Length: 179
Image (cartoon, rainbow, N blue to C red; front, side, top):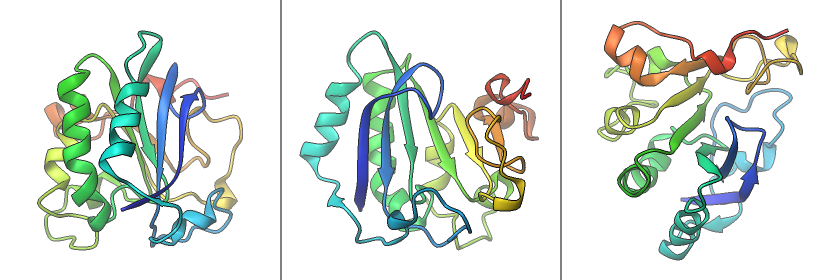
């Protein structure tokens, strides 16, 4: 897996100060995408053990609230393969820090075992340990710069643990009260 960028003091892609990893590779190709260069799976640099360790180190300060993974598309099958052990490591080493994932795939697509475009043996383990999923493709015609943590009104900020417990999508408090 490649990545395009790492931001170690990001305040735009989730609550508080975060480390954000922008992975490469996306098959959605949303019109108006803010990060088109990351559509190419070969864009950027290789996600190595050294890069992983650098991100882990960036998460250590108490003022860092957590990790955000976006892209590109983290939930492309080939990206899930690499991200799963990394996300598991983050959860083990920082059990009190939140993990956010941005995906153009809908929750319903990710949890559909028949959807071979985005569901693999890694999907459920990833979803079982993240806190927030911002789902849905960016839709230029629904773009709204006043929305919190998303670019278009069709996207949802999902409380993953509550959704898994209830069996239906539960929106996170962090995406509500948009004016």
